Image 1 (cartoon, rainbow, N blue to C red):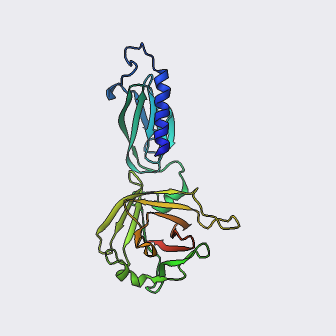
Image 2: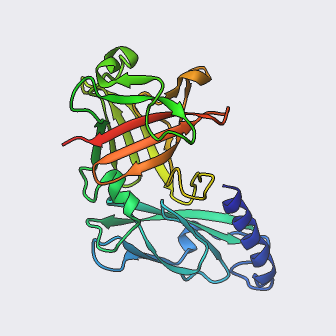
Image 3: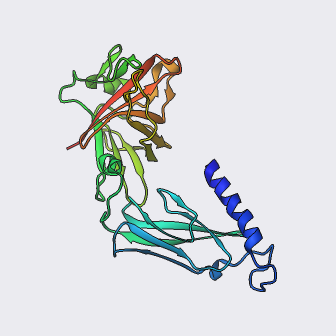
Length: 277
């Protein structure tokens, strides 16, 4: 957010200098109407996920928010990982302030490669991807704690799938998490009775890794759940606080292991999930 604010004010400063003070249409210190913005926003290929964004408005700087990123170029071509109707938000910047508007595009298919993690988390179609506790038997361990960085799975407290009806009665052992890309990076937690428990969004950052003493990765990135959390997403030894950002230890087509390192620096809790078939 700080970077976005800095970018906005930097552009504002530039256009305070560049706006023509004698130009009748856009006088210094004035803004323009939304209807005066001259924008083109369209898929490079019909229904595809590569979007062209062009600001043809004279003397107006650009700030584009396309959901998975920000651009401050007058003309840019970006990859969008989301399906369905997608709103592209434009903020025009000049000496008098800002004016915002939006344009919508329809994305029917992922034609151009995106970061692998989008598909690993949420699939590539409108159905998304449904995750559940990783068990075949109720005796399989799916949640618990261990040492950091010595463990990468539950080792001390080892909670079994069969315990989840008691541990997490609102959701139950067969509750699920749905990740989908229908218009945004959506997250939905659903109880085993089919009730929606939480709706939120998710984001990941594969540059945020925790390293072992020898420099090898202990984690491969982070997953953040906004306005929600994963199944039993609490830290019991930190007062049961809700965890929103998790270290990703494993992420494949059908397996996901997450972790949360406590503030004490030597303990972690682990969550073991699989894709529901």
